[in-house]
Length: 80
Image (cartoon, rainbow, N blue to C red; front, side):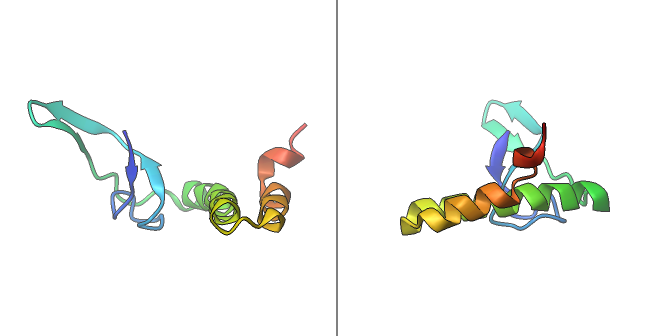
């Protein structure tokens, strides 16, 4: 389930969107806490979160420069 983190993955910022397991019942889907990710996985996720943050900022501020900066930071743009 994709939800606002709010401490579900403790090694990532609370305001980011995360994908976590969930329990589904009569009351609907409820996200389950994951805890802390191994350091290398948290670092990899934060790399992509930086790109997302700049992209969102570009949309909210209407600043194309943030789009270019996000593309330059995105590890996928360097992949061949």
